[in-house]
Picture 1 (tube, rainbow, N blue to C red):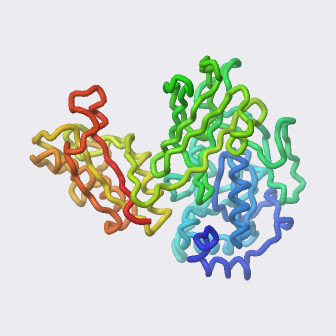
Picture 2 (tube, one colour):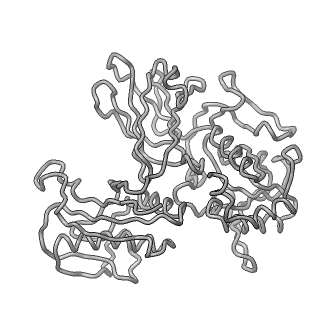
Picture 3 (cartoon, rainbow, N blue to C red):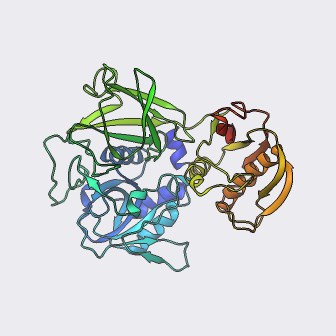
Length: 434
């Protein structure tokens, strides 16, 4: 099933590979100045290796290498001295939804000499746009690696440089004694200073179908008291205090929008045991917890808790953008996916409200150009559903794949005067078809 999903719409790509681009892994060297066709970038070595194996199993060449300047593992489908060949492959790959963010890297992928460039490849017969190596050209809002777009403070959990074991080169690979040959973590972003007495924790969240990294918030809870300890970001090295609950256990909860909820319980003192060895490992003194996330299924409903609206308006606040892009990525990943957007309000009051018109692109600010209306809470909740639909249409999603329903205050979770009443104002996404 995975194989057919990956290559069913890419016969032309396979032909291109077999006729023009086949190279045995031993014939490439990421230290050579070349044009590289990049198909994915990863923070974590384990993920790059896994994705590379998945691509190879499905009939395509792939290798990976660690780029020290960018602190990322790049998976590439082609290394060539012929720039035109690489550009042609980028464009062919982008015809397949699984590779719509393929891009071109020129230079030395591993031993960066400061003269490399990342190239945005436009359709044939249009002008190519180059950018400096400080920016990354990618079109997938969920799986792009934002680490590559900004300078970050780093802390080592392993090596300075790593090249996949299938690639023969003269490069020297530095590793610590704690590393294994097949699992190496890159230098990770530090969320906050880690003190000596804290446990070091890294949560690795991956799309189980595409084998790509997913970024999102994770909740860490005291497993004995069922109490929230903190909320952290995945793919980030964090420090965690001893919960002092007698068992030294915590529960890590993933509720990243677009994926089914998943929880893992770990003993911080003995993280790897018979019950956790399939999702926990240690590298040096760092605990790595793996989450293979599955997409929502037909009939399931997910709440967009991190989509917020201005008061009495169907205009989203700027902090809503991240979760919206999770929904956008889900729709782009599966072109057969159809959804219903449910809008809800706190109570059923009637009054003045602001909303978008069809030409209005100010999705995240009160610009003063919005439409003003007077209506019910039901109408406001409908307008909010349409605001999300309007944003997704603007990002290339067909209108026919989305239905809208406004409930107003008919399905409140709490009394409108309850301390939790703010949670009544929400948007839910129902999966109609996959």
